[in-house]
Amino acid sequence: MHRNGLPPQVNGDEAGGGGGGGGGGAQSPSANAAAPAPPPDRLQLDQTNQEIVRLIGQHLKSVGLERSAAQLMEESGCHLEHPAAATFRQHVLQGDWTKADHDLQQLHELLENDVDANSLVEMKFLLLEQKYLEYLEAGRALDALHVLRNELTPLQHHTPRVHQLSSYMMCSDNRDLYHRTKWTGAGAVSRGRVLERVQNHLPARVMLPPARLMALLGQALALQAQRCRYHTSAPTSPSPLHTTLLQDHNCPRERFPMHPIQILNDHCDEVWFCKFSPDGLKLATGSKDTTVIIWDVDPQTLRLTQRKTLEGHLFGASFLAWSPNSNYLIVVGPEDCHELWIWNMETDELAFKMSHSRDDSLTAVAWHRDGNKFVTGGMRGQFYQCNLEGTILYSWEGVRVNALACPADGRTVLAADTHHRVRSYDFEDLTDSNLIQEEHPVMAFNLNPSGTLALLNVATQGVNLWDISARALVRRYRGLSQGHFTIHSCFGGANQDFIASGSEDNKVYIWHIRGEEPIATLSGHSRTVNCVSWNPVYHGLLASASDDCTVRLWGPASAAIHD
Image (cartoon, rainbow, N blue to C red; front, side, top):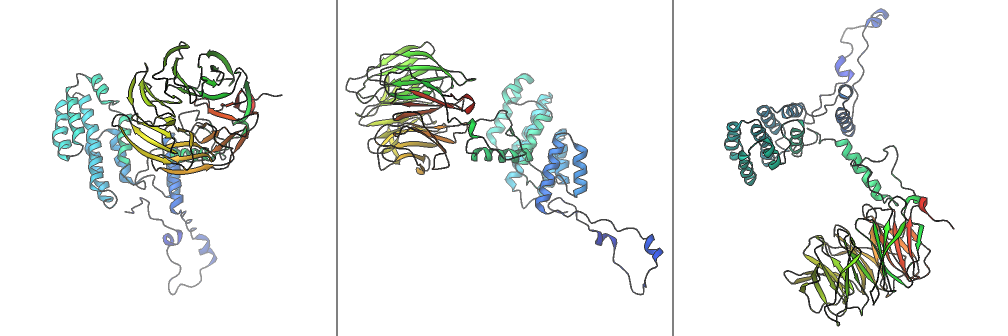
């Protein structure tokens, strides 16, 4: 038997026999006319083409074109999968566990050099687990107990899981069984899932992974979108194949948020910060004029309307932080500010104002990912972890903080300090470690949603991208003007594939995360652009805040304003 499951190829010369023997003279014309035509040569396919045929055949079967798939296999001389694997598949889907176990042993003997003993035990365990659950569902408790004691337990594999399976004997009925096991019951769905898990341990030349062609096409499209210079949107359907396969993916510039769509003139002094809420429905802007303005986002028109002005920030509002659920907004001020405000965005009212000491400098803040506490600090050495009532839970002395971020682990806090570093602090163990060392002051930084990358605005340098786990500089982005002003950058796009930053030359710069040169430079502001914010939900919307007292909204060309 051929290891790749393909029948031997026979060409016409081999099938038709040799020519003349000794003593055979020239044949007459009539004899030539009567001889049958030699059979055509069997199509010879190399390995790549054989694999392509198998992928197409699998897809044809998956969409119900059984006869077309069979004809394709017959004409090509390929097997969709090894005959032993086909028999195994049939027995699993039929729930014939005795025959499926026998088939599995045959497959293992056939592939003993490719499948190790542990994989065989794992595959047997998966089959027996399904068999056990189906017996329980059918009310065959004694048969289920036999499987548990005499088949599963002797494998000495996944012992905690075996103990968990034994507890299902106590289920009062099938509804209780389904609830406790998160199992859908005997049938094509659950058996198909078992088959998929078993396939992970078998070579693809024997049994193709499910929906392999669709998986490959999805990967190709995802890679094209990832490399697309202007791709900001998320898939419009659960399937990765949400666009045409007939040509390469290419987003037009007209859809990219680089066109001016609205100018907000409601602040009367420098606008220091802007931030979209996590739900994408609100924008908060903080200004030197002592106010924070909350704007509502219309997802259809991408226009903003003023909702509420939050007043009383006597030192100005230089930094804003939304809670993860978008229900609260924290406001802090510049270096001399010792106060912190938390606003309830459901009522548009002040929840409380925190002022621990008039000697404090509270200029930076970040929410923990659970939204139940936050950290704050400043340049005078204050560094606090607080709950939602403003009670200080932990205090770290002597850390001069100018930027903060909370990773997804929910335990550590990252802080940029006056020694040009970003350090990790664990408030529970009171331990700290150095993550990033720059040669110049870190003016601001933020993390991508997964917490794997840090984006730093570094004085006199610009914007630097760091890999947190590797503690390595990934890329330096060029073009912007960064002196000693605090400029805030951000990640953006559906897959966080873009970087945007303000600049002291009055422009907004945008880069693809994999390229050092800007892909767009946005002009319109007349003074330094202090901050940019990319909408985390409606990815075609970008905001920028400037010392020229305005906030500008950038979007697709279809929503652009015209002079």
